[in-house]
Image (cartoon, rainbow, N blue to C red; front, side):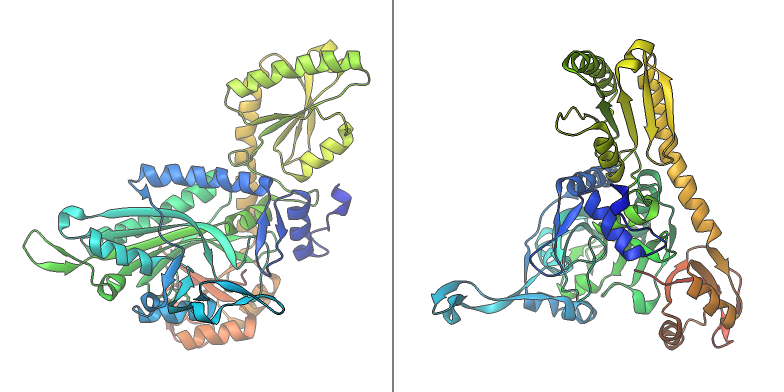
Length: 487
């Protein structure tokens, strides 16, 4: 199966699409820019969702659900917000169809009194509810998360990385003080970092966005950035301190302990199915998908091998014992006992689908009381004893998880540079990778660098750096910022 996957060095974009196809993660939809998430892809998303959901609840958050449709007037209440999303909105103008000469057509008599926006994000509809929920300081904080789909009318799309409709979670919280809201914003950024590194085995860098790159309506946007195998950056999560902008736009106030009515403070934060794209591009190889064990829908697959019915019965009985032992340990395991496919086909399929560990068992293995183990990440094969197999596999899954992270971290470190002059900067950016360089803090300088090099400021590091001179203007700079070409 690997022979049908384009080599990364030949055509990285096609390689990415080939991996998705052969791993059966997603298909293109009849609707331009949308995707069909197949069972393999959705199972992966469910594991990501479940891990994040536990982390959200462990930090005191609850899940709720808000409407898909937002009155157009709601978006207009926060000026920066509507300006940021106006060009990406899908708009519902009518409520029904009718039969016409050429088939179904929009019924002109069903025009809505107020047009509806298919949610690009939910700040406005949620803060309209918060106005009714919040009366006093006793009602705060509100810590709500929503798992949902959103629509943003993208012109250039790519499966998982950028689609018109995608799945995500969006947290929306309300607080009595600025300090609490900032603490929440930073806490959720750390949740995302922990998830990316501990579950996705994807190293990230934390920081804040420049003013021009902030979320529309935010006072400050915090983010995590990762580096893909083609040395382009990917924004992997954002957490926004919204100040009192949405509270003022929707007149959300509370009565404090001193009897005064005050506007509340807000945050929002989210990650999406874009993370699946990041996972693919962080770990996968020319043979297909590579998945970290913590998120893999199937962590271990057993492939039995036989030549006749007598061998089949004996091999499947042996396999069943292995299956039950691993299942009791909580390992996500599959027994691939399909008659219609030969072992070689099964090996190639599970390899393309990224199953971290494969166990092959044939008559000779039964005679010797062993099994063959194959690691997906290294493609190494070893014959191991049947006794103590469960504990051995538990340990090996942990080793694979750590190895994937270490390998990705080394790649990031090897492709991260610091430069102090513009000519070197342009050379490094063209070659790809993370580039730290001084910037004078002006939006016009940021835009000129972007126009000339296609590099954007991915983030301003949270840690204070040494002052210096901007690589472009030579003017004073507080610290180096992180540049890269990005998805």
